[in-house]
Length: 80
Picture 1 (spheres, rainbow, N blue to C red):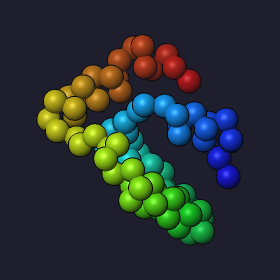
Picture 2: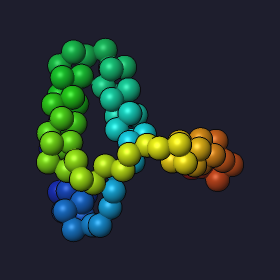
Picture 3: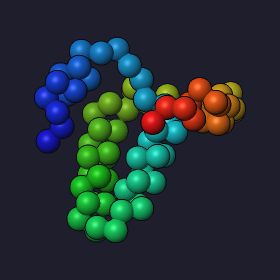
Picture 4: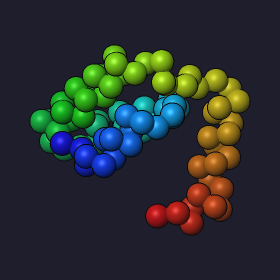
């Protein structure tokens, strides 16, 4: 179960989820050695996407370019 404070914040916050984050979650699910864990992550992701599809921002060309710049920026690389 997620941390209650984080779960509560998600319910109140105004936010959007970029498609690259969905891709990274899916990548993490596929990379796990545990079939049970992979199934759990996929089920939770499926549920989230069904319930909150309107909050997912599509990945167009400009978004892909910004993501590439940010992913490899010095500021981002300094973050743990």
